[in-house]
Image (tube, rainbow, N blue to C red; front, side):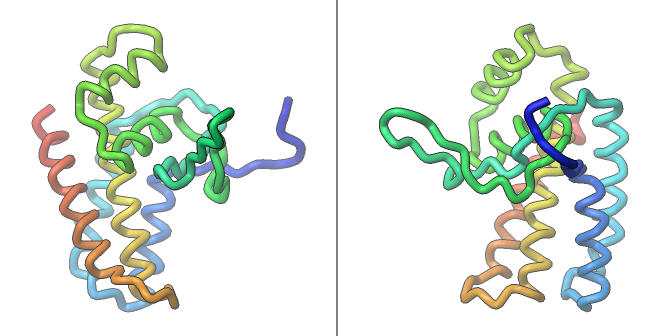
Length: 172
């Protein structure tokens, strides 16, 4: 009711598939790992399963929050679109490195209930997808960005965070 015109859907799993295509076409140094990333992506998407659709920001980095002393502002709506609330929650937690206890509290506050094992697993799958997307975004940036920034280092750090989180996910 409050959004005029059409809006996008931000489906992280499709974004990852798109990044893989861009990386292949750009002859990325990461090509040997792409099929593994895509297989993981498919497993994560299957685990997330059916979703409730809501409008999300989809880029909840600390730098996108501004506190002017009176209000808290959320800026940079470039990735905004319909999505699962699990993505924004997982993205917020992973981007800002929340401890697990805070993640559980976040989910309990959002869903207003104790978190089931199934919801926790689905959330964790989305958290893995958020981290994989960030790593693959960095891989694409290695090829296409003109900014003076060490994207190889950023990719390495994000892949490490993804791999650590994915190792925890596999224990479910």
